[in-house]
Length: 188
Image (cartoon, rainbow, N blue to C red; front, side, top):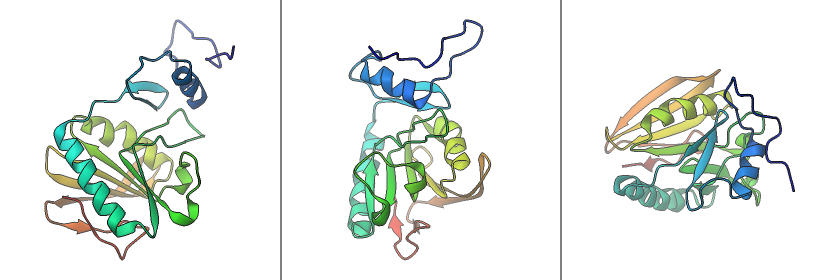
């Protein structure tokens, strides 16, 4: 039987899981079945079930993005992103991968042109942990659809663990992904 943990758990400090350990825990059915989890900075988080507002945004954005970018990019909804250099494997609501970079496997972080999180009950995590992970790993275009505030938060120009360009769009405004500047997306 394959060993699940790569190193022993020390009683005096929290155990930070690696991506490999997390995947083995999932495959070994150690985590509760029927639930979705993601690994962020070595911690395992149960993903919140999708509410009506979140689901509506997923359906509408999915349709708009596919219609506008189908010939240029692959839309990856709710698929884990592989970050090899750290203890994180986030599962954003959407990722856009330029067609020339797409392969038949989970996307690698360096292939991702845009990450979109639809945030209702997960706003703090999306603006905190996930934003740090994406900035640290060079995701150039990170959008948060803030369902509660009815706005789109656009984060660009990552340096270290922060984005140095933040733009807030309100209902009715459109924006183009950095990778595809000629295609504006109506996000609301």
